[in-house]
Figure: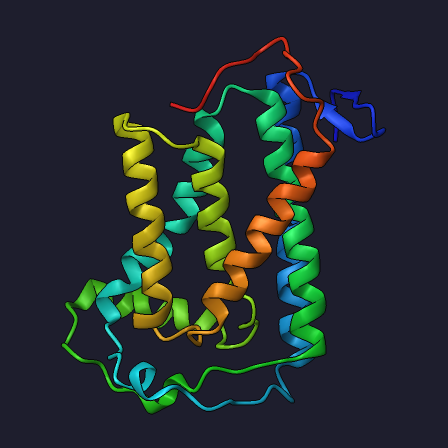
Length: 224
């Protein structure tokens, strides 16, 4: 990561706001590659697995494309609002680690969600239909287990931390809605969600092991 110091473990540590955003851009590009390549590798031989009975009864709700997409502005807002550079460093390491592990799993056990088996529960308005169709066109129903939607949303919740401030409450509410939308937008199996949660918690813990405890950085603070 640019603009860095070194932790006791020898890992780069963010020091400035410029470094914070430059590092985030590099991590985002790496994560995009780690998501796209496994999907293309596995697309031709991904397998469909059986749905739970209760899972099969969950309807496809095109309108939930909006909370599904909310993951992306949530990531930006959560990261931008965090003034604690050590915490931001931990977030970036956790995200990159989770993405790398997920990429290996996507190739080792490629799954495809049978979203073609579901008809829309309620007709969407024209804008929602267009957006839902666009998302489905660019986001194939592969790269299922674990759900990176879940990992990303949990990382946002962990980054901003617990509390009852409006910003934190809003972050947690949007994150939970986005997680739920993975089922109603028919992109993930139910088992993908706990797998994604387990990966997020493990990656956050491992990244935290590399952070210097109690270290104050030049631009410290907490997420709003």
